[in-house]
Length: 573
Image (cartoon, rainbow, N blue to C red; front, side):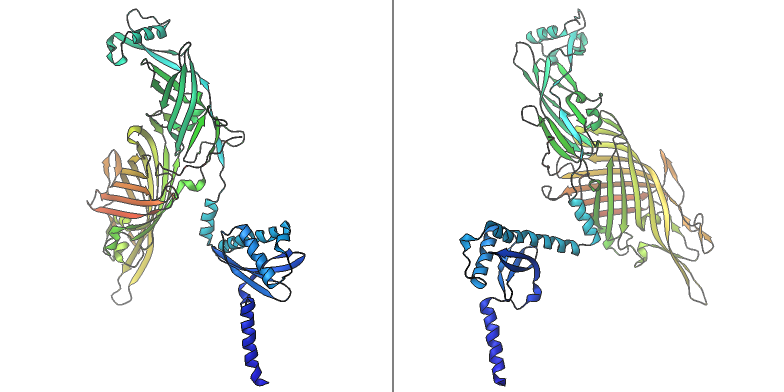
């Protein structure tokens, strides 16, 4: 009897293989119970994010299916599972007579497996990943809807002779001049004067396209028809080639655009007459960077909802390397992390001029600027001193706020030139060693805080491509603002030297020049891209410089590159 145990075990093992019974039941977990021809079967499953396997069980046996990809069609899955049941568990069933509701139970298994995988993925995520995922999946909110008006008033400018001016009917006189072949550019301006009056013909708006960037309509294209009695309509195109339009001017007068007609007169319209910006529930001027099209020639295209900009669209995270940091004797850090926010304001506009156009904030941490190398923190002993420039050069954390006070737009150059003011704080590692001739030296380690502020000039370049750039020239008054003394020595006038100040327009001891560059690497799929910076601080007291050459990756360049993946327009029903 003893010799029969081994052959029986072998026979049992091969029998399990032949009948497809799974020997690793612990890999499968119960997914659901289904009923086929009034017989209940247990369905176990094991899965990954790309494929899954099922196990069909009756009261005594379990049989494993083949591996399925997640994209398998419902029909194929149903047919294959029914074949497993017929082959291994119930040979009497007729596949062609299975009720549809029984087949629907099998088809639903794939959805339940996908739900399981989603929960497994959520459980594996860190808190940061959960936050980022919730941001990506945030539901779109709407700021308002834009309505395209059809017939609007307009002004027209005629060039009228100064002598014998007939202001009662400037239109007929202008037409007479045109018929005589006197082109606008050939008229002696000394003998003629421009006269602007309310247009008497009908101006019909046909189509309009608007591109939004940083809470302004950066591009507006309007197609219209000037309808005159007894004549074919004249097609007219309006484009905002001179300046971007703040959204509030869709609801108030004061922002206009003009174009020439065939007879060289100028037609002027107000954006408030062309568009209405309104909402029944929520209303704000925070618009996602996007493009919309409105039309009176297409059904249901005269009103379109505009998507509100998400809170995290204002932020970008940057991880970068300072190339200068590869020299271990240099104070620059190899690896840095930065969070940057750009918030558009546009509080007041005078066409090309804007008051408080935007403000930016950034926080930067040097990830490896620690006490590993004395070149990257301030270290002195006994009666030694250091320059206040070291508070900047060897900082391990800094934050800065910039606000553009006055801005001028040069639309043809895709350029905004801004005069602004900045405020910054810096945290710098500090070690003070007090030598003891007959004892162990006393070492004090701490962090020093300093504050800087001053004016700047910013050249912001935003062409409608994958590229964007900022060029900043600024003055900064950097001062130590922390503990007054350490080990009986005062920082000011003792430990810190070069604390004087220069005067040129504004009080300062630093001159900063930097150029920031942004590239979208794949604008059709991602908002992220390459970030690079070339910069240099110059200390006017000791004539030292602090150069920076940075290259890294930015997670969201929505505010820094005027290019985006168009979203599907949502029409107002």
